[in-house]
Amino acid sequence: MARADLTTREFLEQYAVFTTAEFRAALAADVPSSTVLNRLHQALKRGYTERIRQGVYASRVGTFARSVPDPLIVASRLATDYVIAYHTALEAHGIAHAPFRRVTIVSTRTPFSLEYRGYEFVARRPRKSLLANDAWKTLVVPLRRGDELVNVTSRERTLVDCLANLKWAGGIEEVLRSVGSFPSLNVENLIAYVDLLNSPSIAAKVGWVLSADPQLWRLTTEDLDALRSLLGKGPYFLDTRAQPLLLVNDWSLYIPAGLDPVEELRR
Image (cartoon, rainbow, N blue to C red; front, side, top):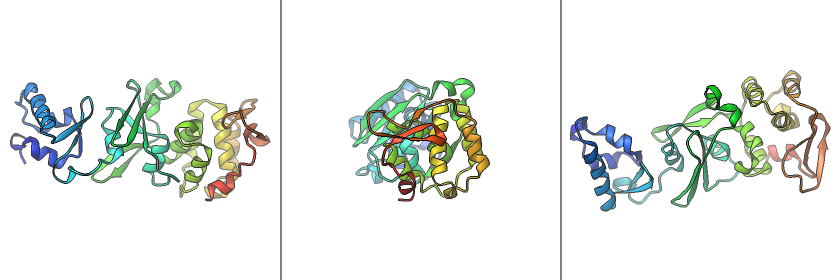
């Protein structure tokens, strides 16, 4: 279909979620900006579309009239430089133990939180240490959602990020029960990413998980030694200190007493 022939309704029948820029790009090049905005305004007024946030819309016509858009597709439109991360990345990889109604992205844009169709969408900024030279885009992979591809942290980065930010990953039990389903890991990439983060505490957390059941991902002694080389004096804490704790001497890491990582990884 030629761009000049595309009507607003025809566009809305093809795209479940879209941005103003995508709508503009689908029209003829000589269509004025004022006309583009007016057509969107009329579509909103008639109930053909709904605004998710400024510049982002969902279609409410055709096959999209009664459906809730894929939340990961929605997330992919909320920032031009987005990466799906933390627990949402576990879900994108198909290994999350429990479904969440919170969808998290990482973006250099101003952080925000919004509610849409029963989901909470949260945008967080990358770690400061990763902002230089766009290092925050390290280990990002495209994953298919229907007819589209979305940017998601890789298996290796997802494991590390979730351990580094348990609040955004659903807690340690959820992380362990999820990552235990990863069929494989590129250990070289994982160690390189931990090194990039330059955090002995994160190195201790990752090393503790991987050493708990090294055969699960075929880790070698050399792999674990590489992680140990990134440790400092410690001690480190897996989570909050306001609970009975047990020290794992190999990693100078305090973990919740009674937590069995092997049992959780193999659930």
